[in-house]
Structures are given as C-alpha cells and as structure tokens.
Length: 279
Image (cartoon, rainbow, N blue to C red; front, top):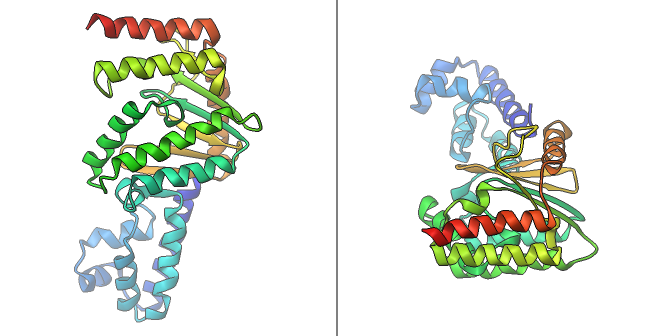
C-alpha cells in the first residue's frame, strides 16, 4: 500500500471511530448528511477522498465538533501525497514552478523519465508555453502562463550545476509527440540536440525499437532516491515511503540500460526532426 493510500485509510478509520462512538449506523449518518448511502462506506474504507467540508459535517453530526480540525489536518497531510491539479495550480503556474525550483535546489541526485513529452528542464520557452497553456485550458486554473514559463526557464540552471547529478531518460515517442506547432517542435529538438552535445542532463534516448525490460507506463521524477513525483491526468502524486519508491528506482535502472546516448541519441533526435520536415 502506498503512503497516500495508507494515509487515506487511516483517516477512514478515524471517521468510523467517531461514527460508532456517536451510536450512528452508516445509513443514519448518510441520511442526516443528505449523502448517497454508499458515501459513508467509501470514506471509511479509504476508497474516496473526503473534502474538508465533508469532515466538518461528519464531526458535527457525530457531536464532535472539537474533532473537526484534527480531521482536516489529517486531510492536509494526505494531500501532500496526492493533490488534484485544480488545487495544485490554484495559486497559479508561477507558484507551481517555484515549488519545483525549491525542491530541485534541495536535491543532489535527480533522475527523470518521460515517455510522451520533453521534460521541463529541457524545454524551450515556446514549448513550455504550449504545455503550460494546455494545462490552464484543461484545468481552468489561473492564466499566468508567461510567469510560469519564466520560472520554468530558471529551473534549467540546475543542468549546469556540477554539484548535482542529473540523469534524464526520454522514450523516443517524447521526441515525436506533437505538443505544439511544427516550428516550435523543431526548435525544441534543436535545443535538445544542443543539450546532448554539451553533455547536459546525462540525456539518454530509448529507441522505439529497443526491447524493453519493463513497461514505461508514465513519466516520473526521482529525487535523491527517496521520493518520487508522478503526474497523472487528474493529480500529482508525491511518494515517499520506500515500498513505493523502490520500484521506480528499479524501473529507471532497467530503462537506463536500453538508452542510447551521445551520437546515437543525436541520430534519434535528427530522425524525429526529419519526420517533422516531411509534414
């Protein structure tokens, strides 16, 4: 069980304790809260994440208003591991990027794998603008795109820091997936090729033709081998318990063995550029 699921299950146990202490059945509590009958069960079994308003209502109906803030605090701790994008981006894209800057500055070894896009540390301003703009449109968050782009560009300085170890793996589809106009994509690949030639980011490219030892289901970032950030369609996952982190360490090591670097990686980038030129 991941740290997020464990935290949600723990919150569910506390909710059940409060309900039972109040002498209420699940159906009775649901009726008083005007919820669907199954909601109480889902919350208590850790199959649904409660909103802060749900927790305060639960405490009130159980006659334990004094427990409300404790429940909300548990929810806050849980959300450090799993945060929906609307909430994560509520303060804007610049704030989200600044959080990344702060974390990366505290990190000595950073391992990145991306399967369908060029990661932020290697992005050009135009490519970053397209990616951040899409997120704003999808999640309806503050439209501070330019501020987000500027802060994302600041993050690239870590690639020049000799005191940090950065290793970036890209699956070949990340070079070919269209996230912006042809001009922007070509510019992005030019920049990527320049980074490879300069030896920045320890870049490796995994060819589509490679026999993969594991299935690269999604991108992930590993910080100092002790925490992992995974971006899904709906949320950002922040994993810190070793049982959750260890599989990512092993997957990254396995994928590293299949990656092309140097001249071979450049050839894969040039091939992707040639495909763009044909369109």
